[in-house]
Image 1 (cartoon, rainbow, N blue to C red):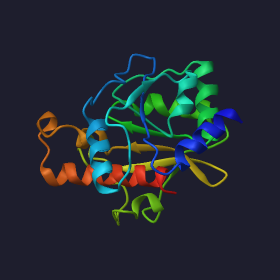
Image 2: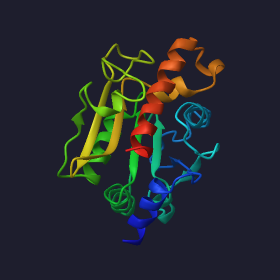
Image 3: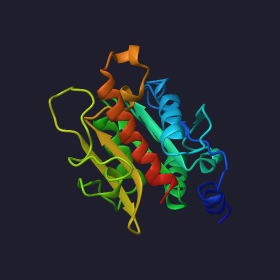
Length: 212
């Protein structure tokens, strides 16, 4: 109950300076990939949807009690992911208590992260979100659903979710690479319109969390 109340307070107090976090996981994957992506997304969100998110994201480990201090946690990387039993329990409790986990495959994470998600929610399957889902509708409309930011294997971008009691608690973005689009312009040399598209989708995710 105490953990749940922390999340409720973070999500509901008007004018409160919020903080979001990057997940530091084990397994050898580069959890630290895209170091400029979250700061850029935070700046864009604060300017465009009037959020009050601290400019520097925190770093949090899956089994840490500090996880419950952040209403939004982002996870990315290219490789292996391993959650311990305590990680799994803590992540499940976090999301069931009101927290939200966004996992963005930076290419090469898919086969590993799907196994770990199934451990967190063994009775829930990842469900592809339709383009009509609210996360694609406001404040920016993505009529075709998740946008394509980077090409890897020529596959279409897909957004998958885990739902609990009709609430989206986990978002997994695949074959999209939103985080690369949030990075500083010179990192990936993406055109301005591609970066803008990625940032707008990121704002939609934050808007869904903070304003619903």
